[in-house]
Length: 101
Image (cartoon, rainbow, N blue to C red; front, side, top):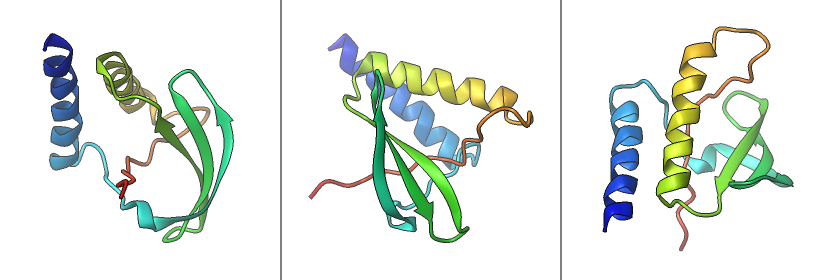
C-alpha cells in the first residue's frame, strides 16, 4: 500500500506541474518516425520527429512506473528545471503518454 501511495504522490507532482504549466504535455500523435535507439536502466530511448517543429527529439519510455522509477523521473525533472538555461544541457521539452489499447 505504501508503495502505491508514494507512486501516486509522484504522479500528482507531475500532473500539478503540467496544470501549472511548469511542464508541457504533448500528445503522442505529435511525433512520428519513432525508432528505438537504446535501452537504459529505466527503459528505452527512441528517436522521433516532432511534427509541429520539425525537430529531431529523443523520447524516453519507462519499463515500470513503480515508486522508485516515479521518484527518479520527478528528481530528473526538478534538476532539469534548474539547469535548462545552459547550452551544454539537453533540453526537456515536456512529457507525453502513449495510451495502450
